Amino acid sequence: MKRLLLLACLGFSFPVLAQKKDDDAPIPYDDDGASSGDDDPNRPKKSRKSERLRQEDEDEEERGEKLGSYDDPNYGIGGDITAGLALLDASRGGVDPRFSFGVRFIWEWGRLFADEFLSEMFFADLQWRFSVTTDGTEQVSGWASQHAFTLAPAVQWPFSKTLGVYAQLGVGVNAAFSGIRIDQTEVQLQGARFVLQYGVGLRGRPAILADETLRLSWRVEITRYLRGYLHDTVFAAGVGLLF
Image (cartoon, rainbow, N blue to C red; front, side):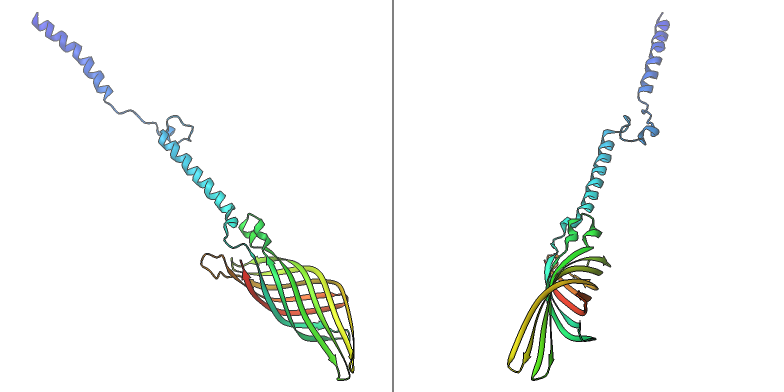
């Protein structure tokens, strides 16, 4: 009787031990489910959160690149002084070489664009350029001064952030003041006419301060002015500041 009772206890203990062994086995992991997207319910929540944060960082970086031109500490507004040789078209024929002087206000209006390349591509000048001619003898002489006031947008092809070549086209008014002197008597005349300006040049704007809030503006240019039937050519250089 005791032997039968012992055998019965052993028979009941085998299924319990087998079930416990099965419970201790590792849970199988589905590799296919883990490689799917964030919507996969088998992916751990922590992994899905990391993927979302990475995507948000990429989106923020992309927005930062698009708005990078707005973060430039330099506003692109300034001015310079320009001087050079003016070959004035003489009414009697040929050219009359004279010294030319001028000042101009510069606005880099390309900064209105969010794209970094376009922001470096466009600027405009509001300029005054001056030159004087004289001719005659001690008894009879004449003089004339030319004042060109122009507004000229320009398109620049940048080699880098600080150097580029440009082409320019503008319009304005040429104010002319002249006088004729005979002995001690002088008669003065004045007038104004439409003027067309066009030209090309090399332009640089290296940073002066480490934070780039102040830049040096320099140019070497060839500019032509059409005033009536007269055509003037100016070879000039300019230097100034950009804030």
